[in-house]
Every structure is written in structure tokens, then in C-alpha cells.
Image 1 (spheres, rainbow, N blue to C red):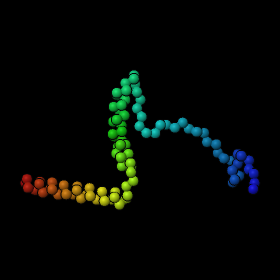
Image 2: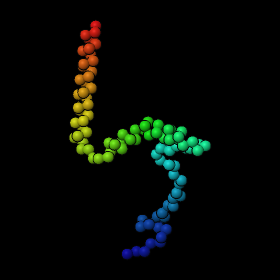
Image 3: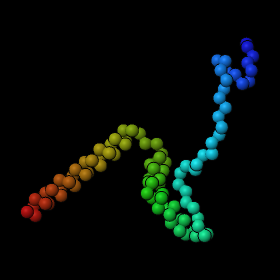
Image 4: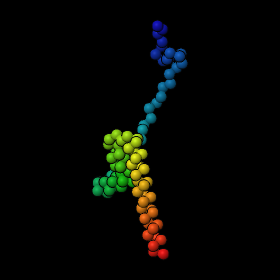
Length: 95
């Protein structure tokens, strides 16, 4: 087995040295101004609500089979259609 210089890998090419970049914070964050925690908390709650984060966490809290997801969507479509037909029938009676 050959021994290689530490700066070279098995192919004989120099390894690139990457400089680590400072990463921005991913996710939701809020700055607190003048120790006003109430306003910051209010903004954070609004961001969480707008991003549907809690709904995603609730959906992913347990595994759901793909067939169950399809069945759920199909039943929702049937229900929407049922209400649409009922609304159209009510509109026809009013004329």
C-alpha cells in the first residue's frame, strides 16, 4: 500500500481547503428592542402562524402511510364537492 502526502488524496490531486463561512441562522428569529419582550413574542407568534410551522410539526409527529394520505385527500374532495352541489341547488331554488 502506498503512503501519500497528507496534502494529496489517492488521485494525486491537491485537496482544496475550504474556508468556513459564517452561517446565517436558519428558521424564525426576532430581535428584541429596548427589552420589549412582549412585542418580540407577538412578532414571533405571528411568524410561526404565517409559516404554518405548527401544522407541519403536527403532521410529522407520527408516520402516515401514503395510502392514508390519499384516502384523506379523496374524502376531502368528496366533501368539497358535496357542499358545492348543495350550494348550487340552494342558489337555483332562490331564483
